[in-house]
Length: 497
Image (cartoon, rainbow, N blue to C red; front, side):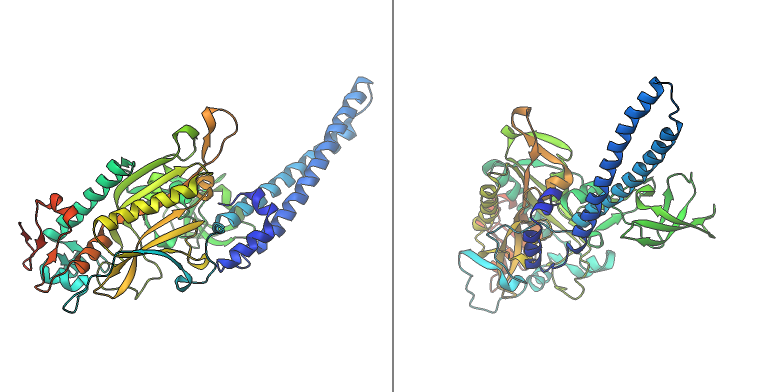
């Protein structure tokens, strides 16, 4: 989340940057709400000053034995007015937070201006595409022929966009995960973590998935209820409300501007009663406590230090984890329907860094090189692109995408995104650092990158190392993880040396 004071002081500059991200007008309400808020604060301060002066006057009148009842009554009215204005300020504060919550990060000056992936800037390439004396096939055809990839049975037991790996298909993915973790842990200096694959709403908010991208997540409905500053009431949703005991309500309508909710009372059987409660503040509602399946290990790794103050001497902190990842792929209907390119469940090795603001862009370059190192050791041709403003992720200030060459599809596919979020996530998750444990704290910069997704790396190996006889060579660095085998035979078995 952007800093409130920073937005106020750099409003025109930020508006320009957001326009470069195809979000012109995103701050239209901000200035109006902020102006109203500051006007109210001025009124509150004037009333408090008036009350303080009156309190002194009342004290003098009482000492002189004079009647001060009229002034006391007047100040009670002033106090009531201060409370009313304070409540209005609180509503506007929450409205400003909601506006900023849905505003993306500001692009770094080195990010090229553009509207789409067509405007991304290529930085470098490594290696050369393999040459074949035959027409290379896509991984879905190779995997099926080898008996190591089974999309049909995955669809039967779960649905579309899932995969079953058999035999060497499963072993190859496991070998890739072990290889990546070993390289990052032993040679790149990352601390390995095994985090939960289920997180709460606070964690999703901290890394920027909530509230804007809830439809992209897999939610696990809970049974308990609690207040949640990130949830917005949805029509038909059932909630509890402060001051109404254990009465259940169904949301009839919600005004995002005033954050007032219209609720209908339910009876003990959950049936509508027709009794309507109007103007219930969103902040007084209790929502069902839900959990979420992680879309990436970035979420639990970053939130490990939520609401903590780190010692500057410990920075940078580098973490890596191998986890399953779950994405609903909302809005991707009809895209990449073949193979394992865009699945609801996949596995990935993630890298996360917590860095000092003065060195975070040096750490971004290191993190990117660490992801590249995996591809280079596997002998996979790729290119690095600097994403343009219109293609940046919501939380990122700058992102390098690594795109691996897939000969069976004759395209480059993104296999890793390496991003610097600066203080955007740290401000949302309240992750700070302090020098020597003393003095004023400041927000760390967070970074993350895929290092790499095992499924897409599996796919790249199968397509780039395919042979004319239908077999697939195993990259040398992986053979030790697979009992010394050199290739996968057409029968789907390991072929020993």
